[in-house]
Image (cartoon, rainbow over all chains, first blue to last red):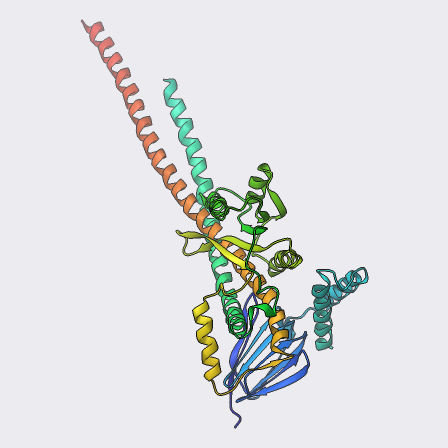
Length: 133
Length: 295
């Protein structure tokens, strides 16, 4: 019997998940990482991608935007700009935003104030589409 | 009597006003409920963010990031969050006065303003203030993206050296009856957030069994956290001000409805009195006429 730990996802708009889980895999800035109970204390940046958790026989898939994950022994908190369950994602809308982000990036320099934000939008849209396929 | 008709007209008009204020009160109450829920929803994120930033900032020196360093200076920027619409009691007036008082106390001569809400925009445009940007608060729930835009603008100016300090003026929501205007220093971030607490936290983690691992590095995490923290603060101010606005409007409309009710009661009394007086005079005339015929 695997040990459980508390797992939470919060965004500026809502608390999406707060439950006891066995295992979480998340898209870290330097690559995907997995968390089990008793993980060492750890704080990392997250990049847009798919996050999976497992709690008993139940599994969940959530697409997250840029943010942070704070892992401590008995608790993992994910702070992200955007997070949606797989079922909530609208692929058509994601394709639209991917298209407009790519178009916006055409005319931008990396120094522009909005550059990083547009790249984020593009990556988030890509992550959403990839997760749906 | 002409007076009678005047009073009747008056009563009708007050009744109309009362209906409007009542409806506005109901709408404000519904919106207030939603705004309060939004604050509750946003709170965990904001608190967690503050906690992370504090514990990280306590461990790193002030010089390690430009947003942390700086001691302020004469070039002051202010972000003022007001509402788009009036009829909410003294809400906007109080906020604008708070900001003016603050600027006077700090002896700021040429503040650069970032105004949210039509009211503030109109007010300072008339006075030819130095406005960076004025945007509307917008209908419905405040968007996080709006906070991001404001934060990006202010951070860019701060890093360019156009601004030495950035302050945030907004209305803190306590309850539907009380809203407290607040001035908060946003940038530089250095040690504004409860220094004792963060020191205590820093000490606690040092004693802890294991040091936290940062990936890619604590500097990189901090560098991405700080602008985010500013965004979250602004977002919270937008939410608080929006809830305060609805609270203030609800209270104002409630007392307006009450005043209207009182006025209607008073006017009705007056109306009835005059009507009765008219009837009495008429009766007297008829009776005295009949009496004189008899005689």
